[in-house]
Image 1 (cartoon, one colour):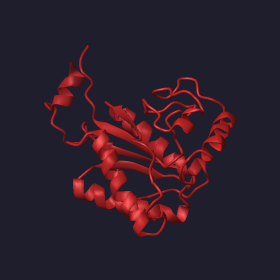
Image 2 (cartoon, rainbow, N blue to C red):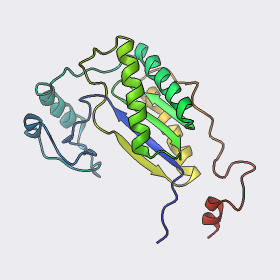
Image 3 (tube, rainbow, N blue to C red):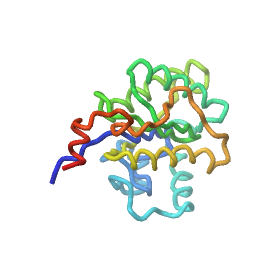
Image 4 (cartoon, helix red, strand yellow):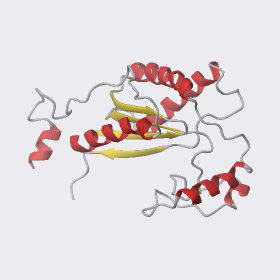
Length: 210
């Protein structure tokens, strides 16, 4: 079997306390470091194929809120620009190419083209830049964590994957009846690496032909 040729990453950053290691939906964690939280349920690595009902998720977090060290806080829509500003600076500094971004009350979706940085490094950079920004803006105090865990990452190897996920990300705010989001750092997807004028002998094009 040929090795997968990754061309983009769908990164999901979760707000502190909004996706715990033993979340009934599954998580990217392999260990629970808080015994009290561990009593809420067993850990399941990865997103479960069969997802629990909304009532079960709400019940889990109602119990978890009493066990967390800090209050569960979500972002208000008026606070989204502070996060976007941090993302814009980090994306410009690291020269990432971002094709979609949706900032939600308890999580963020970002779609970024393949880069010398790994998906894990990108998440770390975006988390670091934004947690400093929201604290400087007074959205969180110095003690309260901003993000929870290492986030999620999905790897894409075809332009169709990217196009489909761009629509999914763009629709996220609309589903919650939030305004459509248009961030300055988001670039329109041009079909890369099969964009107009691409080299037909590029490694990716050759891989497709084979």
